[in-house]
Image 1 (spheres, helix red, strand yellow):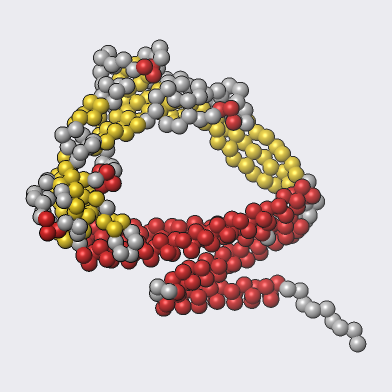
Image 2: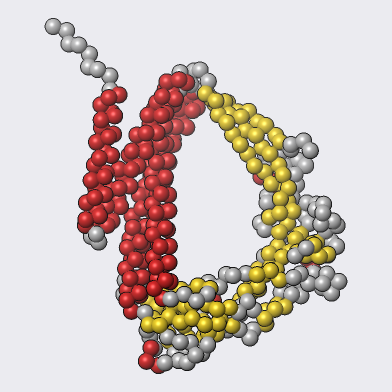
Length: 391
């Protein structure tokens, strides 16, 4: 089958390119500021979370779920047992009914999807030429894809909104021995397992709207031929969370288990499928906190880098009058932006940690100083030699 593509070629003059880069300076400053704010907030979040988890690990009490001990009321407790429910959950549109902690219906529509790929070539004189290729393919998607926003909507029209949406139903009451799990704990039970589709001859689905309803593997297919779906056909799959063994760390209030508020300022309510000791659960939570901290640090660094690149953009645009020179300047500004982002990130992180871990903060500030020295040394090397003074 030939590729369904559409190619567009656009050009910019050097003046237009320079003007855009100058406008980008202000956007770059905003992006860099957002990166700095994210880094500052993330360090505070990381410290608070780490302190709260350490506090919880020190105070948690392991108990058995078979009876409620009033002496533990208000305390952070850990227990392992079978989370179960007597609630019956039903999908009112499709006739699926199960006794489970959760029932999920996933609805997908067969639709056109647009992807684009651009390549920009610099031209002598400072302008550039961008070749953009738009490709079109048919995919299953839970979200309605707006074909009106396609570059080439002709021949790629989608129906619009889905006649039936994805939805999840949760049991009102889930118990763990003599205790009742709060909604925040129940929502952490995400071990969904497939549910066979209902008999298509015994259900009447309003969203079918004249489509043929038939079983296709583990799905319910709404359309003419599952082997050759057409745009607008629907695919429905069902899954449930069965009663299972879980380990919980939460606050005991009577027979209820809910979030425990630490003095550090975070709420603790953890649930993991299977049998896990309290120390293992806290170690996993601490590891998760460290991973999230580093991911947000990298994202903050990236935002600052993008912002500094945009701030230095006019220099590249000026050099692009001769593409070779523009490429050299572009490489230099990328290095400066990278080192500058490193300096700014290290300083922000160090200042945020200064009140909490002075030794680490001093180490980070030393790293920032080294990066700054490297920037200054590179700048000194790239400066032209001074002109001789006439005597």
